[in-house]
Amino acid sequence: MLFRLVIGAVFLASTVNADPLPSWTEGANKTSIIEFVEAVSDPASPDYVTESDRIAVFDNDGTLWAEQPVYFQLIFAIDQVAKMAASDPSMLTSPAIKAAADGDMKAVLASGKEGLVEILKASHANMSLDTFATDVAAWLETARHPKTGQPYDEMLYQPMLELLRYLRDQGFLTYIVSGGGIEFMRVFAEDAYGIPPQQVVGSSTTSTYEVIDGVPTIVKGQELFFVDDKAGKPVGIQHHIGKRPILAGGNSDGDFQMLEWVTSGEGPRLGILVWHTDGDREWAYDREGHIGVLNRGLDEGPDRGWVLVDMKNDWSRIWK
Amino acid sequence: MLFRLVIGAVFLASTVNADPLPSWTEGANKTSIIEFVEAVSDPASPDYVTESDRIAVFDNDGTLWAEQPVYFQLIFAIDQVAKMAASDPSMLTSPAIKAAADGDMKAVLASGKEGLVEILKASHANMSLDTFATDVAAWLETARHPKTGQPYDEMLYQPMLELLRYLRDQGFLTYIVSGGGIEFMRVFAEDAYGIPPQQVVGSSTTSTYEVIDGVPTIVKGQELFFVDDKAGKPVGIQHHIGKRPILAGGNSDGDFQMLEWVTSGEGPRLGILVWHTDGDREWAYDREGHIGVLNRGLDEGPDRGWVLVDMKNDWSRIWK
Image 1 (cartoon, rainbow over the protein chains, first blue to last red):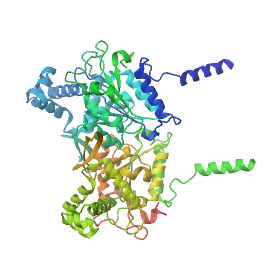
Image 2 (cartoon, chains in turn purple, red):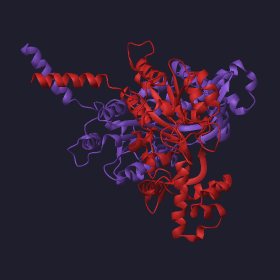
Image 3 (cartoon, rainbow over the protein chains, first blue to last red):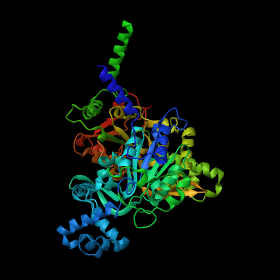
Image 4 (tube, rainbow over the protein chains, first blue to last red):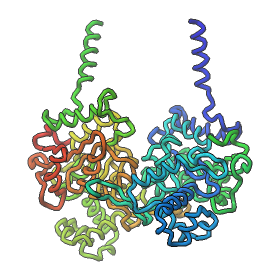
């Protein structure tokens, strides 16, 4: 009996003192994050924030999951066009669609914005939302990343999963705010991140409600409805959440305005930028390229007090 | 001591058996609602629904608060134009604006859709969202309803407040899904209904993010972004919530598609229509008029199994 009491006490103590961010190496960045979260969630702290205002928003591509060699959603679009063309070759009417059907990423990218829009329309529009969600789920089941051989929805950053969990444990509502498609992300966000559909903000096409053969149906259209990127991110946050969050995390200049808006409100604020510095375990990129370009964040972030997370040195483990 | 124990036991029993809907008269409608809520929230029930899927959506005008003689938001717009014109007569350039400035509701309505849009733009657009929210809050503080003399945000239906509270007590997330302005409703929805900003879905204008004199600002524009009415309601729900709710409440044909979509999903579903039948305590209207017209709901609702709430007979008390 005494033994069990002692074990219980030890267990309790280790739970209380458990490191909420075990994959983050000790240092100034980890300390800043923990001190912020403790300050806003401790009623005795001068920086205490009521639970209803403890809202944290995170970019997805390059912040919660990887984004190289191109956004995973584009790989889905290309794979999907290839699958559709295999059963309906009549759709092979343009160079971009043919390139996608051949899985020729170089030719796809060379087809320019017009070509990409064509591929996105073919794979994302003019179908019921249920069909689209089923397509995405089926793709996630079978598709594998060209470099790692992993399912795309397992290429998640373990330290960020720990941060999401820690924030929720401390009373935060956690949101995704991404340039990616809102309905694309909703397919996996709950399983991958513990983030339910109503806490996903993203880009979208217009959609309509139609009763088709007696069945009420949401149909995805092909016109852009909202682009949740750059200055669109604060707008998307306001539209969906209706208030300014107190914590924002991103990794590229597409997140700049979101971090700027979030960290310029009154009271305690935290901005986090994930900096891709680890070419061995992940990818190393920042100021140049087509994906996740980070210039303004590197130039202005530190002066604005944003935590610049150096993946190579701040994360002892990268992958889930 | 024994006395206190007995008192305690009686209190406990009365709490357990307390009527969750005391302002609803006993009858088939009240029974239907309670049986539905009990069935979906009882893990032992065959109709049990996991908590994350217990989502309920409600129209606002005429469902949670009153909507006569015209939508309260239009009264705000007119009052606001009058206030603006008093300090800046140069804006009195059109018959509609002049009618609003004179508080001449008849002339405002006679100005047609074009006139109404003009009044809405003058009162709702081309300003920071903070300014707009401050304007709405100030109006709610001082404006009084022409018939009741009450503040508008106290003209709430007590039975619906009880229903919202009951649903939340049983693990539901409660949402407003209204044709009214999303940012207009967010100003009072949390105090009035216990519904936080992120659970308000409504119509909106486009908005932009701008750094004005160094201050990050959300600016309300004047172009329509989304109309959350009729077939727009299921679309708005999907956009914000990302899944189909299991309960919907409305009062007009503007809510038909929302109830249709919600009640046609698999598993247990409940549709509720508030029918304005009490000309003494509230207003009596349904098939005709400019506000809250209810035809299709009366014709098809009962066959679809929707609960048609007869305000005169089903509600022992109407006002909060």
